Length: 351
Image 1 (tube, rainbow, N blue to C red):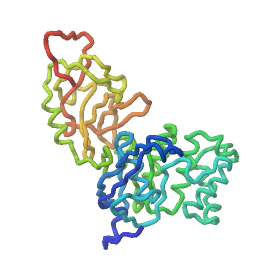
Image 2 (spheres, rainbow, N blue to C red):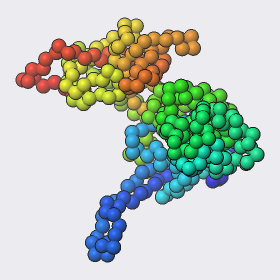
Image 3 (cartoon, rainbow, N blue to C red):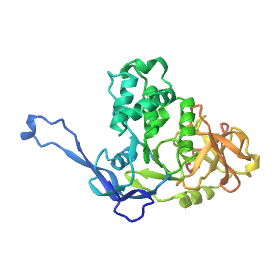
């Protein structure tokens, strides 16, 4: 798809793109002639307008079912939109489905040739880069084993290695990038950062820290729509939250570890950043991300000559090193008071 616009600096442009699927609630059979089946229309994308310039690194974040993968597929040309227009400039290589372009009965080397040719690489080019592809994938003795013996992480490593060794102008990655182990994720990070500046990258993930580390922009998708920046509303809500008052948590937080459990007594305190200690739950915001981040501070570290807090957003062993300063710290400390008791005669607001 070639852009009709005269701006040669645009790599991807979507105008009013929508994608509809029809959900069949009954399995089609011969009885359809006699019994009316129920079909439901589902809009995975709704009037998406998006412009990405050459060399930009853009992240897509959102809950499951928000339309992230569908958006990547229509941009990559894997599926067509129901309405709207998509214009791209340059060769696109996508790593959306780990199984796409692979054959389970072929060996790792055979799949390198198969997948590479499907991505537009010549046989001679593949022969020249075969050693580098295999070395980067780091699949060891499995290089001569059939693909069905590979784990999801090994398949990811092989697919990612092939993708980055192509002559792609636009690289599209789905959230599958987080399937690999920690060492390989760090390897992916280093590799993406080292790619040529003129390569355009679009990455969908649930890992905000992963995206924020190298993406210039991050878009939030919800219910098939690109949501506008709601930071001002969210910030006002949190800043107006009364301090010193006890709230009951009516929903369990699984977004940090240890988690805030349902029924816990939660106290909001106003504190200066300098008093924050490891283990404290703090609220802050990051420019370009439309929601407040609430993480547990683990420790501090020196990042590019500046002290920042290292937070932990889930129960995994990966840390998110955010640069939290007085400018983006919201001045609120959230603590759990296990000794607090609620009186049934008095109503408490929920958090």
